[in-house]
Length: 192
Image (cartoon, rainbow, N blue to C red; front, side, top):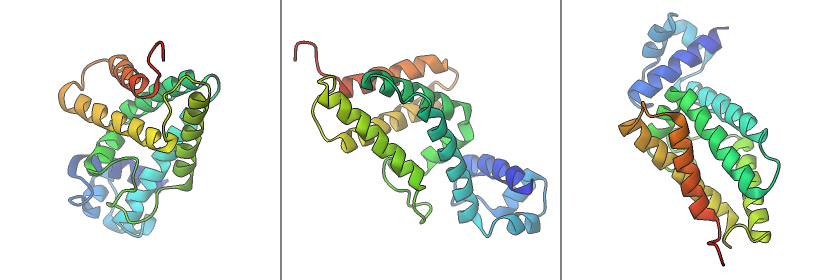
């Protein structure tokens, strides 16, 4: 029970202060528990951060895996929608993710431990979808793993810009904007 309360509080603290400036005492205060309780639940700040990240990564992958059927373009567009809607529904996690200050498609240096294997598997599944689209002539030829990283960069930049300038804009506007950019990145021009 304490772990959930603490991770939710920590997510808010990390979003506000960043990983480096957040203290376990800040988390305890936000959670309404003692610092001793926080340390009884998590060995330290890195483990707490990893617990938040692992939980959210698992949730977003579970959500996007539900839309991984159908033609490649439809699958990619559905994944964009579900991923963006998930991140917008969890703005503290989005802020944490953006505050790391590095490319999402590349391992984080804030936390030394590797990203969950499920995250890597998800990236590989996305690359298979891209390869299928290339093989079917729907997507431009290219390295599917690199294209997945480029799509991830599109999400990151446009979500950061939205938080900075348009946080009150409707989510569907942002989803459409990201889908349009991803479509331009992947799709063959008419007549090619």
